[in-house]
Length: 347
Ligand code: SF4
Image 1: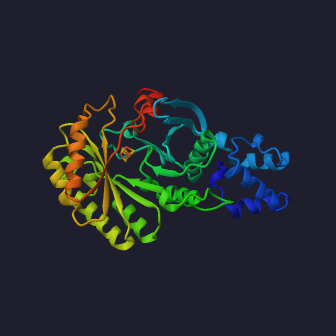
Image 2 (image 1 turned 120 degrees about the vertical axis):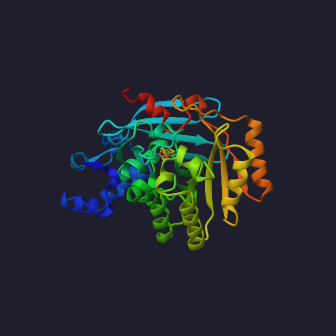
Image 3 (image 1 turned 30 degrees about the vertical axis):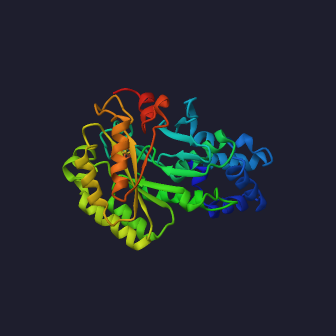
């Protein structure tokens, strides 16, 4: 059994015809899946019961793929976190981040994460399994149901490292980008894949020449510090990572966004800013500065607003396109993976 969103059109057509149904039944099914955002088989009320029953024997509907068990809302920012249960009981998070002009959805690609970045709640209970394509894609349908419309932007920045689940994450991104009628028709440049620095993943992504955006979580400008806060750096050192980012830029001529979480007294001094500037020199890029969203398990503190602003202004004064992001989810367990971690059984 797998999610209906993991099924290919070829296999659904073959099944449809083998059941003695006409091809237009598949058109109707696609309409329920990609346009009307059906939650359960029962919702699809213009499709014959026998056809629905045959589908239900083979596939999970959205309800069984991602059963919503909690919706946490922040009335001030209107950010919503959806906590969903997968068919095997695993929990994942999806976040809806509205702004005046667009709705952004932050989706998960794995149940847990093996990368262990120290300030991230997602990795604290380790990795359990990769999400299948339909479990990744289905999160956007859940969000679309909440919003009442297709979202504008998708970021693969929820629980998990997308390049450790490359085929399913990129498969889901392709389905988001394709269509209609199969897919959501979201522009490739509105879909961002975010990695903590999986070098072979970045190379493959560059080779395959997608138009999706790439974001790299850097968080530290040197090996000593990056080793401490991002264990992935022990596998792929920052020099190799940055060289790969330069290769990516040469191959694709695309801008990379570097994410840099500011932690007080850890990576937010003038010396760190100078090292970061040196790392990025000559590279077409943007930097997103993110003041730390505290998690109980990590003692790091959020720097003062003034420090964050100064750090950003210093990068800007050195010609680096920099944005300071404000946390939009503090009152809804804003840090990635926090809601999931609270709901998970304690060890
Ligand atoms: S920040 Fe991303 S890569 Fe790092 S542990 Fe969290 S989910 Fe994994």
